[in-house]
Length: 160
Image 1 (spheres, helix red, strand yellow):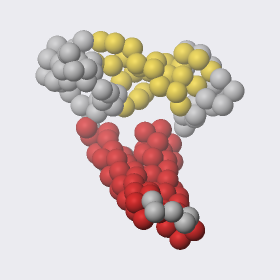
Image 2: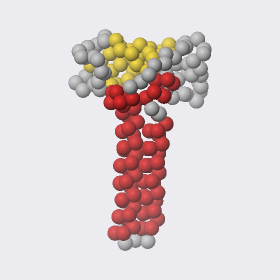
Image 3: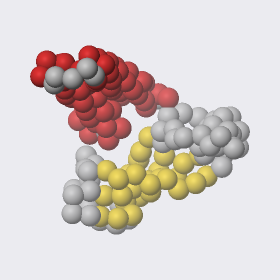
Image 4: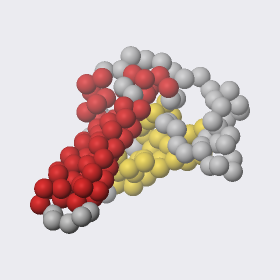
């Protein structure tokens, strides 16, 4: 399957792309959780009078540092908007459900891990909050999406 390449407006994509916004939220939550755990470790060490205060305080602090590192690295793994659209093919999608605050998209995607194999089609669902350019949120509205990869099952490594 051929991947269509085009130049991406990074600022627009950061504002409207759900995957990029999710990765930003992941980074922020990792940093906040890390900070809270480090502060809990310091508070445990300073204010709890027990023989376990060093162990518990150090454990909380190290776990907090690990949470912050994982949040930053996991968010960085997604990459920039240009890398995202260069890596994954565009796919047709349609709005299948409209809720008060979000919509559910159903996209036709190729489930093959190897893009050179003949396509094996499937429907994939994704909840989105808004779509730029879609003024009337109605079921059946057609939109293009980037078909990002999913998880590979350990029993069947050839398909997402």
